[in-house]
Length: 261
Image (cartoon, rainbow, N blue to C red; front, side, top):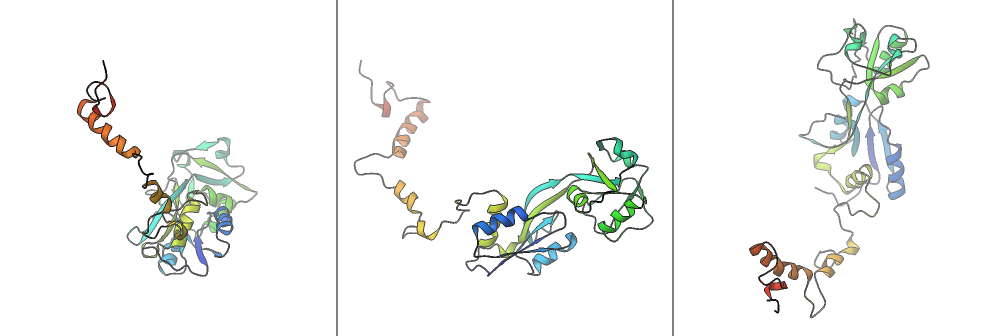
């Protein structure tokens, strides 16, 4: 249900690795009277933030609970392996999961890839966070698989990364509570989907509606000038002839009128 009252500001949560700057800039250009408040939240807690009313929408990682949250998938990130700069894996531009079979693969508690079975050999303990795991990679303890944006977020000079071609990716989506689909949420949907500023987004501006609730432009199209037959009527008459014979009416003339011989 679309709300009619807009809040004084719109609160957008986003998870680590997601960069909302471009969309925030467009929002500020289109809706300068509605401040956009950005808040970074942990990936695992994004759904609770939305359902708890602490944000109006969020840029989150999939999956989400579709029984209570709506979501529009935006893109899927490539997965990379974070390794020391002098690691043997750096000899290749891309690697596979099998190439990491002999490596100790760190699995932080805030992992967002959702492995069915983690590749490589497990570490003795799971790091608490991705940031902690990156420190262990720098110390030579193991390697780490993460979405590309997180590898860039935790960049260090002594570390690098390579694409893992057959690893699962991480999907990013715009999400909001199903019972809180407001006009401002619809505005944000239009922005992330690349709609132009003139798009109606399925809602007609009040100034463009006639007294009967129909858009003025559509009403005008339905009222042809007096004495003129509408194109729809012509198509309807011709359509009945074509429907019976597969082409023009008998004699080849329009509307079934016989051709002069």
